[in-house]
Amino acid sequence: MRENYKKIGEQIRLVYERNGGLKVKKLLGLSISKQFIPSVANIVGTDMENYKIIRRNQFACSTMQVRRDKKMPVALLQEFDEAIISQAYPIFEVANTEKLLPEYLMMWFSRAEFDREACFHAVGGVRGSLEWEDFCNMSLPIPDISKQREIVKEYNTIIKRIELNNKLIQKLEETAKAVYKEWFVDFEFPDEGGKPYKSGGGKMEMNLELDREIPGGWTVKTLNQICDVINGRAYAETEFTEVGVPIIRIQNLSGGKKYVYSDLQLDKNKYIENGDLIFAWSATFGPFIWRGKRSIYHYHIWKLNCHIPEYKFLLLNYFHRETQRVTGEGTGSIFTHITKELMDNQKVIIPSSSILNLFDSISSRIDNSIERKIKKRELLDELKNILLAKLTSIDN
Image (cartoon, rainbow, N blue to C red):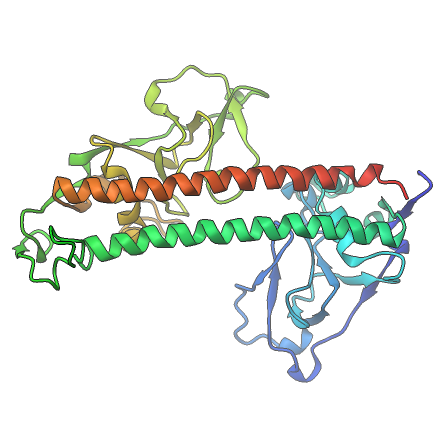
């Protein structure tokens, strides 16, 4: 062990404080992404006095299924002064914050190398758990406290920029949704004089397919009339390779970054390109604009090839609004399956070409801004990972 490396167990102490008298109400869960999240547990009939209290600058972790998940969930509470969490999670704190900053320790836990080491020590078969003693015997470098403060400050600057960037992306997405609602739900798009169409007296006609009024001259088409709905392909593990083209699966759409690869040569419709409109038909329903390099996609994912490119953002926002309804019409007792027949028969309002082109122009500008900010986020993530990787080489 290098000179400035110390065992984790020498720097922390377990904390056990039950929620006696139900004095703390806020219930949190722990995610595999090393964050506290609002708990989704069914607590009806549960004695909440048995739950543990966790306080600001204390950690909660899970040592279960580390090998299976390839990660050790552990998080530092900083958003609240106190909360309660399941008694299944060990809670600990730094024993001496004059020698080790909790934020610095959390940075160490955030490293991919930490998770790999935890996985190496995990035992118990496929769902291998990490023994507490083995966790405590893992070590980390502890530089001078002033150096730790410098590192944490630099790290927090990057994290705040990532959070700000994410908020800007969310604001842009909300703007696109708001424009869609105003134009294609409320029908208040600008008329030839620049005034809101419907409230300005624009002509409305009854549409029997939708059983509602829509602007004069607009039509309704089924999804299969304006685009091709193309299913992905099932892949056997024997087709996976160490390098090649990434296979996009549902977990990659919902934040999971672990890709598998294939070197198969497929039909062009089994590839997705940057900017393609896709969604998952099982468990989680899209839609998504794919932002990445050329990839192939799993059969739980659909790709929409629009016959007219200007339909893409119209459909993206249509499905954003209709997700709950379409999912409710799907089949399956555990996971909802959206069938191709159901998708093909979705009824979509088709505006005049002038309004469609204007909406596409606005949406394209918003989308370009989102893509630039996503690229910026990727650069910030890279900077964050570089800083985390350098923790092993930091000298006093």
